[in-house]
Image (cartoon, rainbow, N blue to C red):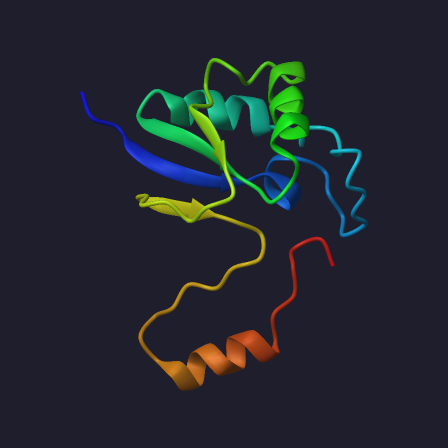
Length: 110
C-alpha cells in the first residue's frame, strides 16, 4: 500500500521549543507527540522537516522512541501530502487576506 508523505517540523511541533534556539540541544518531546507520530505512521510516511543538524535530530528521534515510525529527516521541501509546522500560513487564494495574516502572525507559544 502506498502511504502519502507528511513533513512534520521538529521545533515547536514535536518538541517543547519556545523560541530560545540552541544549536546543540533539542528540547524534550512534547506531550502527546509520541502517540501522534505513532498513529500517523500507520497511514502515512512520516518525514521530520528541520534545519537542525541531521545527526542531532536523528539522536533525538532514537532517544524518544520514534525511530520505527519516522522514515527520514530532511531540510528540503519534498513532495508531500501535508506539511505540519508552527510557523506557516495556509494560502487560501486571496493575497490581501494573506498579507493581513502575515502582519498579524504569532507562533502558538507566544
